[in-house]
Image (cartoon, rainbow, N blue to C red; front, side, top):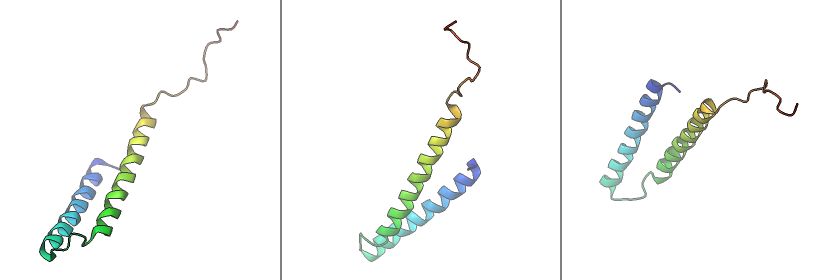
Length: 72
């Protein structure tokens, strides 16, 4: 995911979470939208884990198939 696309996505998610918090405050119901909030946060965490794993794979040294033999 490109940095710009990620930024836009996080801005959108943040707006949704802020709206839920505002509606919760207005209604006085602390559980209003809790399921939606949980799904959003879990989805973002899953995507973050995938992105981190992909970065780790890019940074890991690739095995060298042409290793010198040392047992000769």
